[in-house]
Length: 188
Length: 95
Image (tube, rainbow over all chains, first blue to last red; front, side, top):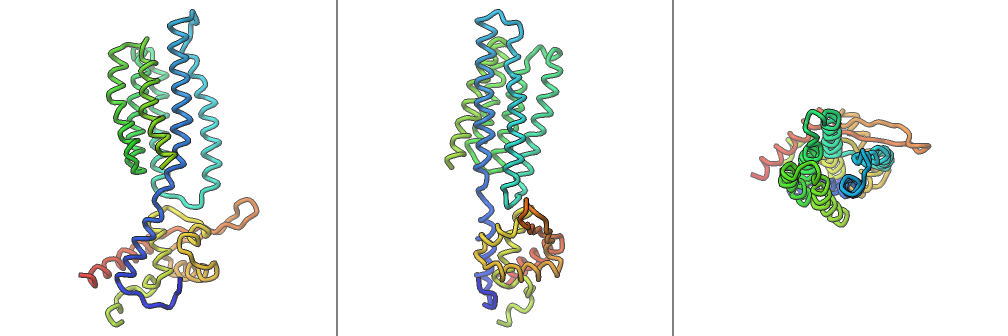
C-alpha cells in the first residue's frame, strides 16, 4: 500500500469495509470441540444405556467419567490453539465464557442430581442446547443455532420418556445438535 | 482536496486507516497478522504503527513467543474515539 496517495471518501469507506470483513471467518476451528465432545457424548450415552438395560453393572453412569480426560484434552488443545493464533477476536472470548458457564451449570446439576429425581440428562441437554444456540449466534453460523434449538424438543422428550431412555434421547440429540453442525462447520 | 481538511490526517491515509479498521474489529492482533491482511511491507507497516502508537491511538506490546520477538497491537479508547469521529466526518462528506 502506498502511503502518499490522497484518499477520496469512497476509497476510505472501501478500506474500512474491506478490513472489517477480513476479521470474519476464523470460527471454523471451533468445529474440533463440537466433533470431539459430540462423539464423547454419543459413545457415553449409548454405553450408559447399554450397561443399564443389558447388564447388572450397578453404576452405568460411570461411563461418563471419560469426560474427565475429555476436559484435559480440550484444555491442552485450547492452549495450543491460542499459542498459534495471531489475532484475538471479541467473539473468541464470548464463546469461551459461554462454555465455561455451561460447565459450571452442569457441575451443579451433576452434584445435585439426587435432589432432581436424577433428571440429569434432560437438564444437561437443556444447558447444552442453550450454549450451542448462543455460540451459533456469536459466530453467525445458523446450523449451530438450529442444532441448539433442537435441544428444546429433545430435553422435554428425555423428561417424558424417563431416566431409563434419556441416554438414548441424548445420543440422538447430540448427533443432530452437535455432530451434524460440527461437520458442516468444519467444511464451511 | 480542500474538502478533506477536517478529516484526521493521522487516519486519512491508506495504510493507517487499514490498520485502524482492522484493530477496531478485533481485541488484539499480531504484527504478522496485520502485515498479511494489509499487504504492506514490514518497513512501512512499522513506521505507520509507530505513528499511531505515538498518538496513543494504539497500544503496542513487545514480547517473545518462544525465541521469536512478538509485537501485538491493540486499539485504545483514544483510537476508538478518533476512528468514530473520522467515520462521522466521512459520512458528512458523502451526504
